Amino acid sequence: MRDTFRDPELQQSLERDGYAVLPLLDTDEVARLRAAYEALGQAPGDPHLACQSSFHSYDKDYKVEVDRAVKDVLQPHLDEVFDDQRTLPANFIVKWPSAMSGFGLHQDLTLVDEHEFRSVEVWVALDDTNERNGQLWMVPGSHTWLPDNIRGIQAFPFPFTQVTRRIIERHAVPVPIPAGHAIVFSHATLHFSLPNRTEQPRMVAICDLIPAEAPHLHYFGDGQGHVDQYEIDDSFWTDNNPFTLWKPPPSSQLVGPVSDEYYRELTDEDLDRLVASGQAIESEQSPAGAMNAAKAWCHRCGAPVEDAPAPDRWVGNVTLICDDCRTVESTRAATPEHTGVAAS
Image (tube, rainbow, N blue to C red; front, side, top):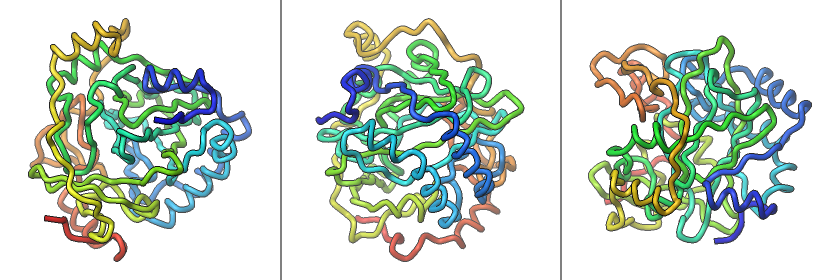
């Protein structure tokens, strides 16, 4: 698997820990990105309660403009720092002051064949991040724990369910950074953030990178154990949002089925072995409190969802919507080239 960074020290950190931290933007560039967000306005559909990416918006034109604005500032630095990577659509993330703005333990979606390639997120702070406003917590080494794990929509179950609390409380580290610095992490690295307990929103600009030669992939399942691999283009991420991802890409982009023979859940015994081998750390710090509110609520309008079970306070559910919003969402169908029927 070839390098992601040009700098060998950053590459070593990424391979060992699953993430690396570096200065990326100066003060003026941070101000340019914040001004771009203010000029575009808050994302349509943002209830001002959650940890909200512009990807959540139903407005494709808005997301295209965000992508352009973020890349105008980031792309020259990405070309300099990274080794021949393709930049996927970029987003702003706003973590609003709210008990509902935490983001539970998770890995990001699989975007490439991870036996051959590595994909990463570039997470650039536009505010100083700290314990009170929702800094990132990373789980060092976790990208190596289940190398055959595939992460997709309605795909295989979260494989860390048995050990979620242990990972959060014993194996994660806080990574506070000043505005303009970036955390670059493998999409396979476990991470989370607590709610923003300040009075000001916390802002971030992000983009995903894949090797220029790597096929851009998406994994979609039927919820019954059958998972398919698709090859998609970048417009998939501006045409869709988390509430439309229950639809698969068109059948013309289908590559084929994915076997579940390698899927397994991580256990306490596994973690003990990973600590002994140096692939997991015993952290001296632990987050104060859970990531998610104890009640179910709609991530589109913010209203309580009374008939839904309470979310897992350590993992959560960022795609839950109420019946009224689901009805509205159904009228915002994906564009024709991105509708399709699940392969059987």
